[in-house]
Length: 404
Image (cartoon, rainbow, N blue to C red):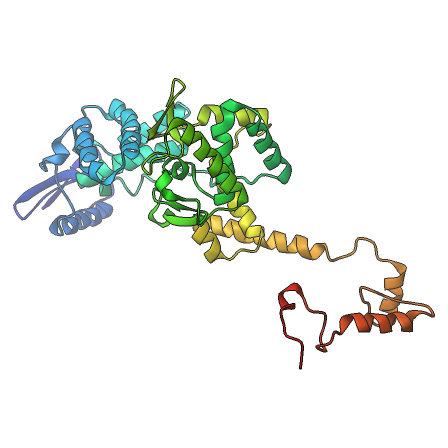
Protein backbone atom coordinates (compact mmCIF):
# COMPACT_ATOMS: atom_id res chain seq x y z
CA UNK A 1 0.00 0.00 0.00
CA UNK A 2 1.42 3.36 -0.97
CA UNK A 3 0.48 6.90 -1.79
CA UNK A 4 2.34 8.89 -4.41
CA UNK A 5 1.96 12.27 -5.99
CA UNK A 6 1.68 13.28 -9.64
CA UNK A 7 1.41 16.95 -10.54
CA UNK A 8 0.11 17.91 -7.11
CA UNK A 9 -2.51 15.11 -7.14
CA UNK A 10 -2.28 12.10 -4.86
CA UNK A 11 -2.62 8.57 -6.28
CA UNK A 12 -2.92 5.21 -4.58
CA UNK A 13 -1.41 1.83 -5.43
CA UNK A 14 -2.47 -1.16 -3.31
CA UNK A 15 -3.36 -4.83 -3.64
CA UNK A 16 -6.24 -6.85 -2.14
CA UNK A 17 -6.49 -10.63 -2.54
CA UNK A 18 -3.84 -10.57 -5.22
CA UNK A 19 -5.59 -7.88 -7.30
CA UNK A 20 -3.79 -4.60 -7.81
CA UNK A 21 -5.59 -1.25 -7.69
CA UNK A 22 -4.07 1.96 -8.97
CA UNK A 23 -6.00 5.19 -9.41
CA UNK A 24 -6.10 8.90 -8.76
CA UNK A 25 -7.58 10.16 -5.51
CA UNK A 26 -8.45 13.56 -7.07
CA UNK A 27 -7.05 15.57 -4.17
CA UNK A 28 -3.87 17.45 -3.31
CA UNK A 29 -4.49 17.21 0.44
CA UNK A 30 -2.47 14.54 2.26
CA UNK A 31 -5.04 13.82 4.99
CA UNK A 32 -7.92 13.62 2.52
CA UNK A 33 -5.85 11.26 0.36
CA UNK A 34 -5.27 8.95 3.33
CA UNK A 35 -8.99 8.87 4.12
CA UNK A 36 -9.92 8.13 0.50
CA UNK A 37 -7.36 5.36 0.26
CA UNK A 38 -8.75 3.67 3.38
CA UNK A 39 -12.25 3.87 1.93
CA UNK A 40 -11.10 2.34 -1.37
CA UNK A 41 -9.34 -0.50 0.44
CA UNK A 42 -12.53 -1.23 2.38
CA UNK A 43 -14.56 -1.28 -0.82
CA UNK A 44 -12.05 -3.55 -2.53
CA UNK A 45 -12.10 -5.95 0.44
CA UNK A 46 -15.90 -6.09 0.23
CA UNK A 47 -15.78 -6.83 -3.51
CA UNK A 48 -17.33 -3.47 -4.42
CA UNK A 49 -14.32 -2.10 -6.24
CA UNK A 50 -12.90 -3.19 -9.57
CA UNK A 51 -9.55 -2.11 -10.85
CA UNK A 52 -8.61 -1.23 -14.43
CA UNK A 53 -7.71 -4.87 -15.01
CA UNK A 54 -11.36 -5.89 -14.60
CA UNK A 55 -12.48 -7.14 -18.06
CA UNK A 56 -15.65 -5.05 -18.40
CA UNK A 57 -13.91 -1.82 -17.38
CA UNK A 58 -11.27 -2.35 -20.07
CA UNK A 59 -13.90 -2.36 -22.85
CA UNK A 60 -14.53 0.74 -24.95
CA UNK A 61 -17.62 2.62 -23.89
CA UNK A 62 -19.45 1.71 -27.11
CA UNK A 63 -18.85 -2.00 -26.61
CA UNK A 64 -19.61 -1.86 -22.88
CA UNK A 65 -22.88 0.01 -23.46
CA UNK A 66 -23.93 -2.52 -26.12
CA UNK A 67 -23.29 -5.37 -23.68
CA UNK A 68 -25.09 -3.54 -20.87
CA UNK A 69 -28.18 -2.92 -23.03
CA UNK A 70 -28.14 -6.50 -24.33
CA UNK A 71 -28.24 -7.79 -20.75
CA UNK A 72 -31.24 -5.55 -20.01
CA UNK A 73 -33.34 -6.66 -23.00
CA UNK A 74 -35.10 -9.51 -21.12
CA UNK A 75 -36.35 -6.95 -18.57
CA UNK A 76 -37.67 -4.42 -21.12
CA UNK A 77 -40.59 -4.14 -23.51
CA UNK A 78 -39.87 -3.53 -27.24
CA UNK A 79 -40.76 0.15 -26.88
CA UNK A 80 -38.46 0.52 -23.87
CA UNK A 81 -35.61 -1.13 -25.78
CA UNK A 82 -36.08 1.34 -28.61
CA UNK A 83 -36.13 4.25 -26.15
CA UNK A 84 -32.96 3.06 -24.40
CA UNK A 85 -31.11 2.84 -27.71
CA UNK A 86 -32.19 6.37 -28.60
CA UNK A 87 -30.82 7.63 -25.28
CA UNK A 88 -27.60 5.68 -25.81
CA UNK A 89 -26.82 7.33 -29.18
CA UNK A 90 -25.49 10.71 -27.90
CA UNK A 91 -23.43 8.91 -25.25
CA UNK A 92 -21.83 6.72 -27.92
CA UNK A 93 -20.98 9.75 -30.06
CA UNK A 94 -19.34 11.54 -27.11
CA UNK A 95 -17.43 8.75 -25.34
CA UNK A 96 -16.85 6.57 -28.41
CA UNK A 97 -13.87 4.26 -28.04
CA UNK A 98 -12.70 5.59 -24.66
CA UNK A 99 -12.11 2.78 -22.16
CA UNK A 100 -14.73 2.67 -19.42
CA UNK A 101 -12.12 2.81 -16.63
CA UNK A 102 -10.84 6.12 -18.04
CA UNK A 103 -14.22 7.89 -17.74
CA UNK A 104 -14.04 10.23 -14.78
CA UNK A 105 -15.83 13.21 -13.30
CA UNK A 106 -14.39 15.68 -15.80
CA UNK A 107 -15.56 13.57 -18.75
CA UNK A 108 -19.10 13.28 -17.42
CA UNK A 109 -19.33 16.99 -16.63
CA UNK A 110 -18.07 17.81 -20.12
CA UNK A 111 -20.81 15.61 -21.59
CA UNK A 112 -23.47 17.41 -19.52
CA UNK A 113 -22.16 20.83 -20.66
CA UNK A 114 -22.22 19.77 -24.30
CA UNK A 115 -25.83 18.57 -24.06
CA UNK A 116 -26.92 21.74 -22.28
CA UNK A 117 -25.20 23.90 -24.91
CA UNK A 118 -27.28 22.12 -27.54
CA UNK A 119 -30.49 23.02 -25.71
CA UNK A 120 -31.33 19.54 -24.48
CA UNK A 121 -33.81 19.44 -21.59
CA UNK A 122 -32.60 18.44 -18.14
CA UNK A 123 -35.03 15.52 -17.98
CA UNK A 124 -33.59 14.08 -21.21
CA UNK A 125 -30.01 14.46 -19.98
CA UNK A 126 -30.91 12.72 -16.72
CA UNK A 127 -32.29 9.74 -18.63
CA UNK A 128 -29.11 9.55 -20.69
CA UNK A 129 -27.03 9.66 -17.51
CA UNK A 130 -29.07 6.70 -16.23
CA UNK A 131 -27.49 4.57 -18.97
CA UNK A 132 -24.03 5.94 -18.23
CA UNK A 133 -24.53 5.18 -14.54
CA UNK A 134 -25.58 1.62 -15.38
CA UNK A 135 -22.45 1.05 -17.45
CA UNK A 136 -20.15 2.50 -14.79
CA UNK A 137 -21.86 0.50 -12.06
CA UNK A 138 -21.37 -2.66 -14.07
CA UNK A 139 -17.67 -1.76 -14.25
CA UNK A 140 -17.75 -0.85 -10.52
CA UNK A 141 -16.59 2.67 -11.34
CA UNK A 142 -19.68 4.73 -10.54
CA UNK A 143 -18.70 5.29 -6.91
CA UNK A 144 -15.70 7.29 -8.14
CA UNK A 145 -17.91 9.97 -9.72
CA UNK A 146 -21.24 9.67 -7.89
CA UNK A 147 -20.41 12.28 -5.26
CA UNK A 148 -20.01 15.00 -7.90
CA UNK A 149 -22.53 13.88 -10.54
CA UNK A 150 -26.08 14.60 -9.42
CA UNK A 151 -29.35 14.59 -11.43
CA UNK A 152 -30.12 17.94 -13.02
CA UNK A 153 -33.11 19.80 -11.58
CA UNK A 154 -36.33 19.35 -13.49
CA UNK A 155 -39.65 21.14 -13.26
CA UNK A 156 -42.20 19.04 -11.43
CA UNK A 157 -45.40 19.18 -13.47
CA UNK A 158 -48.20 16.95 -12.24
CA UNK A 159 -50.41 17.95 -15.14
CA UNK A 160 -53.02 20.41 -16.27
CA UNK A 161 -56.75 20.38 -15.63
CA UNK A 162 -59.20 21.94 -18.09
CA UNK A 163 -62.01 24.31 -17.32
CA UNK A 164 -65.53 23.13 -18.13
CA UNK A 165 -65.58 25.41 -21.17
CA UNK A 166 -62.25 24.13 -22.45
CA UNK A 167 -63.34 20.53 -22.04
CA UNK A 168 -66.59 21.05 -23.95
CA UNK A 169 -64.86 23.01 -26.71
CA UNK A 170 -62.14 20.37 -27.13
CA UNK A 171 -64.61 17.48 -27.44
CA UNK A 172 -66.98 19.33 -29.77
CA UNK A 173 -64.14 20.33 -32.06
CA UNK A 174 -62.68 16.80 -32.04
CA UNK A 175 -66.06 15.35 -33.02
CA UNK A 176 -66.47 17.80 -35.91
CA UNK A 177 -63.90 16.22 -38.26
CA UNK A 178 -63.65 12.58 -39.40
CA UNK A 179 -59.83 12.68 -39.36
CA UNK A 180 -59.96 13.45 -35.64
CA UNK A 181 -62.35 10.60 -34.80
CA UNK A 182 -59.66 8.47 -33.15
CA UNK A 183 -58.44 11.40 -31.05
CA UNK A 184 -62.02 12.23 -30.08
CA UNK A 185 -62.86 8.70 -28.94
CA UNK A 186 -59.53 8.29 -27.15
CA UNK A 187 -59.99 11.66 -25.39
CA UNK A 188 -63.52 10.73 -24.33
CA UNK A 189 -62.28 7.49 -22.78
CA UNK A 190 -59.33 9.20 -21.07
CA UNK A 191 -61.61 11.87 -19.56
CA UNK A 192 -64.07 9.27 -18.28
CA UNK A 193 -61.77 6.43 -17.19
CA UNK A 194 -58.44 8.14 -16.20
CA UNK A 195 -56.66 5.80 -18.64
CA UNK A 196 -53.22 6.70 -19.96
CA UNK A 197 -52.47 6.89 -23.67
CA UNK A 198 -50.34 3.74 -23.51
CA UNK A 199 -53.17 1.90 -21.76
CA UNK A 200 -55.66 2.88 -24.45
CA UNK A 201 -53.29 1.82 -27.23
CA UNK A 202 -52.76 -1.56 -25.58
CA UNK A 203 -56.48 -2.19 -25.08
CA UNK A 204 -57.87 -5.29 -26.84
CA UNK A 205 -61.48 -6.36 -27.33
CA UNK A 206 -60.99 -9.22 -24.87
CA UNK A 207 -60.51 -6.49 -22.23
CA UNK A 208 -63.95 -4.99 -22.93
CA UNK A 209 -67.08 -6.38 -21.24
CA UNK A 210 -70.13 -4.62 -22.65
CA UNK A 211 -72.55 -6.61 -20.50
CA UNK A 212 -70.91 -5.62 -17.24
CA UNK A 213 -69.84 -2.23 -18.64
CA UNK A 214 -66.18 -2.60 -17.63
CA UNK A 215 -62.70 -2.27 -19.09
CA UNK A 216 -59.75 -4.31 -17.86
CA UNK A 217 -56.37 -2.61 -18.06
CA UNK A 218 -53.75 -5.33 -18.52
CA UNK A 219 -50.89 -3.29 -20.01
CA UNK A 220 -49.90 -0.26 -18.00
CA UNK A 221 -46.96 1.94 -17.10
CA UNK A 222 -46.73 0.25 -13.70
CA UNK A 223 -47.89 -2.99 -12.09
CA UNK A 224 -50.32 -0.98 -9.95
CA UNK A 225 -51.92 0.28 -13.17
CA UNK A 226 -53.51 -3.10 -13.88
CA UNK A 227 -57.14 -2.67 -12.86
CA UNK A 228 -60.83 -2.97 -13.79
CA UNK A 229 -62.64 0.29 -14.60
CA UNK A 230 -66.44 0.65 -14.73
CA UNK A 231 -67.79 2.48 -17.79
CA UNK A 232 -70.03 5.49 -17.32
CA UNK A 233 -72.47 6.52 -20.07
CA UNK A 234 -69.98 8.67 -22.00
CA UNK A 235 -67.28 6.00 -21.95
CA UNK A 236 -69.79 3.33 -23.00
CA UNK A 237 -70.88 5.43 -25.99
CA UNK A 238 -67.25 5.77 -27.09
CA UNK A 239 -66.67 2.01 -26.78
CA UNK A 240 -69.84 1.27 -28.78
CA UNK A 241 -68.66 3.66 -31.53
CA UNK A 242 -65.26 1.95 -31.62
CA UNK A 243 -66.94 -1.46 -31.74
CA UNK A 244 -69.11 -0.38 -34.66
CA UNK A 245 -66.04 0.82 -36.53
CA UNK A 246 -64.25 -2.45 -35.75
CA UNK A 247 -67.20 -4.51 -37.00
CA UNK A 248 -67.08 -2.71 -40.34
CA UNK A 249 -63.40 -3.66 -40.64
CA UNK A 250 -63.82 -7.21 -39.34
CA UNK A 251 -61.58 -6.42 -36.36
CA UNK A 252 -63.61 -7.49 -33.33
CA UNK A 253 -61.72 -10.70 -32.49
CA UNK A 254 -60.64 -10.94 -28.82
CA UNK A 255 -56.97 -10.37 -29.72
CA UNK A 256 -57.69 -7.41 -31.99
CA UNK A 257 -56.87 -3.94 -30.73
CA UNK A 258 -59.56 -1.39 -29.90
CA UNK A 259 -57.34 1.29 -31.47
CA UNK A 260 -55.83 -0.50 -34.51
CA UNK A 261 -52.67 0.58 -36.29
CA UNK A 262 -53.18 2.81 -39.33
CA UNK A 263 -50.68 3.08 -42.18
CA UNK A 264 -51.49 4.93 -45.42
CA UNK A 265 -55.17 4.87 -44.54
CA UNK A 266 -55.20 1.10 -43.99
CA UNK A 267 -56.25 -0.16 -40.55
CA UNK A 268 -54.63 -3.29 -39.17
CA UNK A 269 -56.48 -4.57 -36.05
CA UNK A 270 -53.72 -7.09 -35.28
CA UNK A 271 -51.33 -4.28 -34.35
CA UNK A 272 -51.81 -1.45 -31.88
CA UNK A 273 -51.87 2.16 -32.96
CA UNK A 274 -48.54 3.79 -32.18
CA UNK A 275 -49.58 7.43 -31.93
CA UNK A 276 -52.22 10.05 -32.68
CA UNK A 277 -49.76 12.88 -32.06
CA UNK A 278 -50.27 14.75 -35.35
CA UNK A 279 -54.05 14.85 -35.05
CA UNK A 280 -53.80 15.80 -31.37
CA UNK A 281 -51.48 18.73 -32.07
CA UNK A 282 -53.77 20.05 -34.81
CA UNK A 283 -56.81 19.63 -32.58
CA UNK A 284 -55.35 21.37 -29.52
CA UNK A 285 -53.99 24.20 -31.65
CA UNK A 286 -57.40 24.91 -33.19
CA UNK A 287 -59.05 24.62 -29.78
CA UNK A 288 -56.72 27.29 -28.39
CA UNK A 289 -55.08 24.74 -26.07
CA UNK A 290 -51.60 24.63 -27.57
CA UNK A 291 -49.26 22.55 -25.42
CA UNK A 292 -52.03 20.46 -23.88
CA UNK A 293 -50.70 16.91 -23.58
CA UNK A 294 -52.94 13.91 -24.05
CA UNK A 295 -51.75 12.75 -20.62
CA UNK A 296 -53.28 15.93 -19.15
CA UNK A 297 -56.71 14.40 -19.79
CA UNK A 298 -55.90 11.76 -17.18
CA UNK A 299 -54.90 14.53 -14.78
CA UNK A 300 -58.19 16.31 -15.49
CA UNK A 301 -60.20 13.15 -14.83
CA UNK A 302 -58.44 12.53 -11.50
CA UNK A 303 -58.98 16.18 -10.57
CA UNK A 304 -62.73 15.80 -11.15
CA UNK A 305 -62.72 12.65 -9.01
CA UNK A 306 -60.97 14.56 -6.24
CA UNK A 307 -63.43 17.45 -6.47
CA UNK A 308 -66.30 14.98 -6.19
CA UNK A 309 -64.93 14.10 -2.72
CA UNK A 310 -63.93 10.59 -3.81
CA UNK A 311 -61.61 8.96 -1.29
CA UNK A 312 -57.94 8.27 -2.00
CA UNK A 313 -58.69 4.55 -2.10
CA UNK A 314 -61.40 5.08 -4.73
CA UNK A 315 -59.13 7.24 -6.87
CA UNK A 316 -56.36 4.63 -6.63
CA UNK A 317 -58.78 1.86 -7.61
CA UNK A 318 -59.90 3.77 -10.71
CA UNK A 319 -56.69 5.51 -11.76
CA UNK A 320 -54.12 2.93 -10.64
CA UNK A 321 -50.77 4.28 -9.50
CA UNK A 322 -50.79 7.95 -8.51
CA UNK A 323 -47.52 9.44 -7.26
CA UNK A 324 -47.36 11.01 -3.77
CA UNK A 325 -46.75 14.40 -5.39
CA UNK A 326 -49.94 14.07 -7.42
CA UNK A 327 -51.89 12.99 -4.34
CA UNK A 328 -50.57 16.04 -2.50
CA UNK A 329 -51.84 18.19 -5.35
CA UNK A 330 -55.24 16.53 -5.37
CA UNK A 331 -55.60 17.05 -1.63
CA UNK A 332 -55.37 20.77 -2.32
CA UNK A 333 -57.97 20.34 -5.06
CA UNK A 334 -60.33 18.74 -2.55
CA UNK A 335 -59.71 21.55 -0.08
CA UNK A 336 -60.49 24.18 -2.73
CA UNK A 337 -63.67 22.34 -3.69
CA UNK A 338 -64.76 22.27 -0.04
CA UNK A 339 -63.98 25.98 0.33
CA UNK A 340 -66.05 26.87 -2.75
CA UNK A 341 -68.93 24.75 -1.46
CA UNK A 342 -68.87 26.49 1.92
CA UNK A 343 -68.46 29.92 0.36
CA UNK A 344 -71.67 29.30 -1.56
CA UNK A 345 -73.49 29.11 1.78
CA UNK A 346 -72.37 32.60 2.72
CA UNK A 347 -74.75 35.30 1.35
CA UNK A 348 -73.06 37.97 -0.72
CA UNK A 349 -75.32 40.76 0.61
CA UNK A 350 -76.72 40.65 4.16
CA UNK A 351 -80.46 41.47 4.07
CA UNK A 352 -82.10 43.69 6.63
CA UNK A 353 -84.45 40.97 7.86
CA UNK A 354 -81.55 38.67 8.69
CA UNK A 355 -79.70 41.55 10.36
CA UNK A 356 -82.71 42.24 12.55
CA UNK A 357 -82.91 38.59 13.51
CA UNK A 358 -79.23 38.67 14.45
CA UNK A 359 -79.99 41.55 16.82
CA UNK A 360 -82.49 39.28 18.59
CA UNK A 361 -79.81 36.60 18.98
CA UNK A 362 -80.64 34.10 16.17
CA UNK A 363 -81.08 33.77 12.43
CA UNK A 364 -82.71 31.09 10.26
CA UNK A 365 -83.19 30.44 6.58
CA UNK A 366 -86.80 31.60 6.93
CA UNK A 367 -86.77 34.68 9.12
CA UNK A 368 -90.34 35.88 9.73
CA UNK A 369 -91.59 39.20 11.00
CA UNK A 370 -94.97 40.80 11.39
CA UNK A 371 -98.40 39.71 12.51
CA UNK A 372 -98.56 36.49 10.46
CA UNK A 373 -95.43 34.98 11.93
CA UNK A 374 -97.19 32.65 14.38
CA UNK A 375 -99.33 31.17 11.61
CA UNK A 376 -96.32 30.69 9.36
CA UNK A 377 -94.41 29.04 12.22
CA UNK A 378 -97.32 26.64 12.76
CA UNK A 379 -97.45 25.73 9.07
CA UNK A 380 -93.70 25.23 8.99
CA UNK A 381 -93.89 22.90 11.99
CA UNK A 382 -96.60 20.83 10.33
CA UNK A 383 -94.45 20.50 7.22
CA UNK A 384 -91.45 19.42 9.25
CA UNK A 385 -93.24 16.64 11.18
CA UNK A 386 -94.80 13.65 9.49
CA UNK A 387 -96.71 10.70 10.85
CA UNK A 388 -93.55 9.05 12.11
CA UNK A 389 -92.88 12.05 14.32
CA UNK A 390 -89.54 13.06 12.79
CA UNK A 391 -88.29 15.44 10.12
CA UNK A 392 -89.64 14.89 6.57
CA UNK A 393 -88.16 11.70 5.18
CA UNK A 394 -85.63 11.90 2.41
CA UNK A 395 -85.79 9.79 -0.73
CA UNK A 396 -83.62 7.15 0.91
CA UNK A 397 -86.10 6.88 3.79
CA UNK A 398 -89.32 6.65 1.78
CA UNK A 399 -89.29 2.87 2.06
CA UNK A 400 -89.72 2.99 5.86
CA UNK A 401 -92.83 1.24 7.12
CA UNK A 402 -95.53 3.36 8.70
CA UNK A 403 -95.67 2.98 12.49
CA UNK A 404 -98.31 0.51 13.68
